[in-house]
Image (tube, rainbow, N blue to C red; front, top):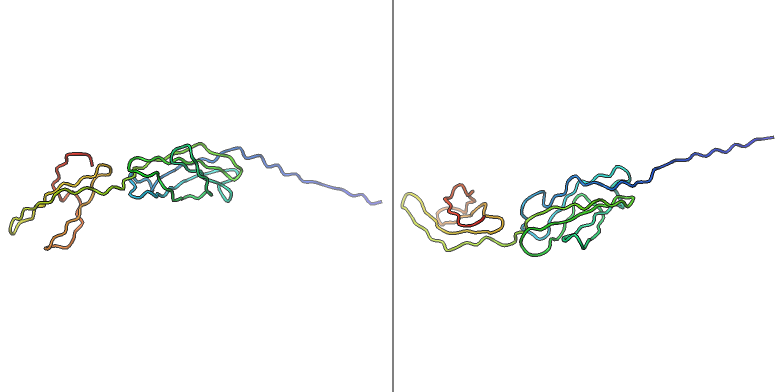
Length: 171
């Protein structure tokens, strides 16, 4: 008679118990200040086992207590809590297998308040120069560039090193 042989092949795939790791978490590409309440978060996350593909999640929080879970993406738009000042955003990542990372955080200063310009006075020296005197203040991010418009010249963007500044406060 005929003899039948059966063979079975077993594949062993170890269980993924390793959480993902975040090597970079930045707000607005690492800038110090944000003029808008909605910021861009960027992440570099790796997971060597199940990965960070479809099914992976990122959980975000502005206070470390209340979390919002989103599909993982390397960049996400996120609203900061209202009000000027330093803000911290917290993130944790879940890989495809469901392993959750530690909590990571990044900071930025939210500054939605426009600089304050004091009274403007001017001194004109014929065939020489015009001296414009004012006080410009910004208590959070400081003043980087001033714009001057005159009837003699078009509006010009001038770096602060073209000015003589007297500072009486922060910024």
